[in-house]
Length: 377
Ligand code: PLP
Image (cartoon, rainbow, N blue to C red; front, side):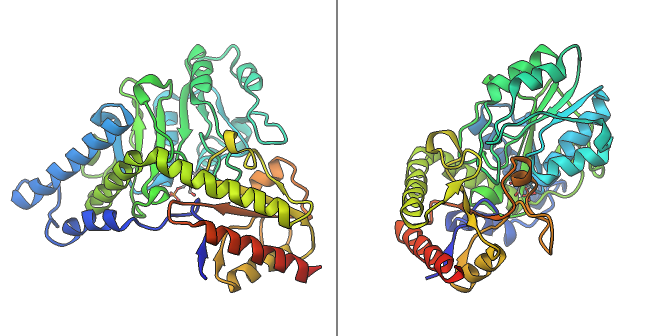
């Protein structure tokens, strides 16, 4: 049996999405900026894709800008907001994806970033956020909606309201949330969000950002004026079509898929508890009602062999992500697990699920993991 439980890294393409993309790779190959018929056909397809994405997220088409993925969207928003507003303060958390952390470090320097406190479960201390913003006006705040490693969720409304009190520009990295949770952007006090299609069964190399109409930012990629001058470069037409189809499918089946995947996660939690004495779960990921339903970050009993464990699972056809808190050796370890003080002696495995996984796969993986741990003893 080959089992893929690394869906937070990327998800398999939905065959329906592939079918939707095909004509835009073969017949409709025109450059959307060309004014002839070949160009106009694909221009129309891109604009109707933009309209569809905007409809699903309840915003206006002009607020959606297609990008090459999550990283580009995040870079554009953060650097574009810094250039436009020159914020007196930049606030983020130590648990953000490197796409946020490294971009901010590059843009303003680590010494100019304030990191909001988090507790041992990785929850953002909102009182600390308030105190950081106290007496300021026009800060830039970047806090993720769903953590890719430990599955913690952030209440965008509460954070957005705190930001609004201080006129802060609020970006949320929603890369792990888009396609898994619904967004109603007209009703959410957030100024920018970011997404990558390959996290919800769309193609790699396609993503988007939402930038609120009255909170415009500077462009980051300059060129031919595409994407309303917000992102130069010939559009990835098939990618945009695929992203849109994937989002439509995700929205059409969201409750059903969420319940199914949550069931897989619950099954794994129970099976792990029954099989591995001393197992625990990092962050909030073990709390079914209070974490991303696609992510389970398992903390394994102390062992010197945790690197070998992932290798052994791979040999058995099981693809998962590792990431101990360890900083030495070949692996640089996980900055997220270090930040929440997971002991470096404990191994960590991130299992992440999709609609394509089955209960049989979960049972198989837990059985093999249990056997591997016994062999290591
Ligand atoms: N933000 C989060 C939370 C992610 O999980 C990822 C990808 O793993 C990214 C940003 C970057 O997305 P991409 O690699 O598609 O550019």
